[in-house]
Length: 480
Ligand code: AHR
Image (tube, rainbow, N blue to C red; front, side, top):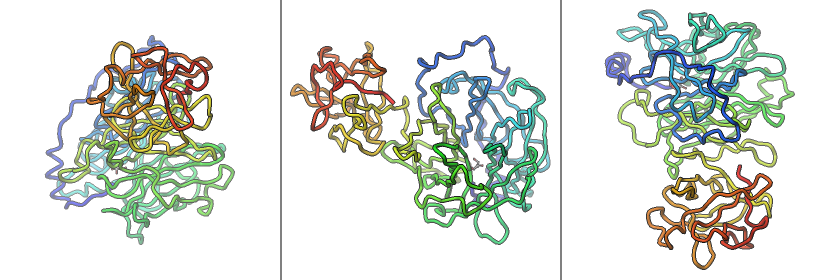
């Protein structure tokens, strides 16, 4: 978070914040709802939830996906849940707690996270006093706690303030367990360091009390961390392939906002600052081709098949009138998180609006993907974004395969047996040449038969993709 305008100006304009209607009301939790069949879980469509910044999604042990995030008015803590990721989009949202009438939690409420701590549901969030002379950016971290085991039905009350090393601007706390220890990571302004915020880490002895002196993990110094404001915030942690991975967000909250990565060996002493390595380059940034600007403040979850998902916010336009903090269009988004052959995370690019894309690995040539280089289709091992295709409903049970980097384009079966890429609105080929029927190719693989000639399908060729009658591994693709 960063702030530019004077307190007085901000307090005046804050009163103009749009008053959106949240579908507050009775908690969901219709216990009779059937758990979604993992194999047939609906495909999420981005943006997953509009105007929910700093999105936090938790797949809880009760099988529900819980989601919270910052609302444009920053005046309430909300929670929704669904049995599927896609279902979060229109799940009923409950208001758990509203900012107070006066005092240190009567202004902004930012970036809530739901955690189960010592047998209770707790929501950590950042809050500040209301306007009118008080310092609306006197932001500190607090927690509210639920009086029952159903976070959608219980009563939420203030638990207290997170004890941090200094009485200074602090926000974006996230709690995670590692090797039997519960840690808290958060963003804070440290006296003597001229930045908006740095990242800190401490083991915790209870929901609000560190068990040891916090360590400083990173200070924003790299060019991509200090655009407009010097910011390291929004930490989020997963442990994969022997590494503790901590993503964070940097720079101002407009299109320059992006994500960085700290990592440590899973066997290291996480409280040793030298155990952490910082990526010198951002791992997730604005992408003009997919039209997602300022992606960041992520969380991690898994889909119904247990596959890693990256949850984050991003706008679908670049230019912002006024203070980005007051712009409501940081929408919650989700996409697969892949890992490369060395086990390192491959964040790719923010995939953009529409159904989640997939990538298709050749059964005949493992490690080779259905892909494109510019407007040319290839079968190759190329960067992730060139292998991601979203399936767009073409009616009558067929789909168009649209590359995420070439929005409004799709694959087209040409009469000469080649596979081209053309604008969806002007494929120029025979009617139906852009339509493919996804069929079972056996062994968990799929085949894309051409709508015009069902006996033919997209196959791998020595020099790329071709359309032919192959019914063997050459035309079988593993969807991932
Ligand atoms: O969305 C409000 C604040 O702005 C969040 O706490 C921070 O991560 C973001 O930049």
